[in-house]
Length: 133
Length: 87
Image (cartoon, rainbow over all chains, first blue to last red; front, side):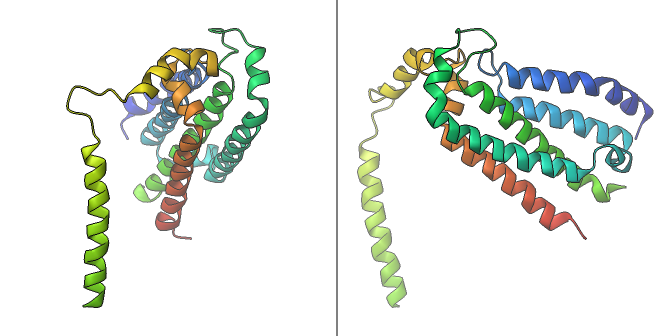
């Protein structure tokens, strides 16, 4: 791909990563949440793949790692939901509204869901760009 | 032929219930049955601790729906992996 896309993508990627995690982390305080945050992270991965080519990126992030992250975060999500049945009220009673550490277990679910969406869409990007070289 | 009659009877039954449900819809612009939305707006902060009401609905009140949604995404990724991966 063009050099411009490559350089700008490489510069932009860490900021997109941070911003995606920011959106996922502040989902209970501001518009956004797990899904948009994960999609922003996956878009960063897609921009890296467009700029550098799938082969160069896959040397860094192998997609085995991506599917492992996806599986682990899915298990995490389901276990947070099951644990939330028991610990929700206790979690709520220790928190101050509108602080970063609030939101009951929506904060934890936003994080787990964001990681899961990012890993899933990243895996999709990897699979779909594999033969494009 | 028997299958056709069976399908016709089933369709009739389903359409009767659909029609009944359709007649229950409030007239345009006068939705009085919207109590759950008011409940969410008034009680989301105390119930879930989340200042963002949309997030409270998606991840707390409707948490199981969202879990199913994530599972769909997972299944989509796995399906794509199965279809497009050669080895």
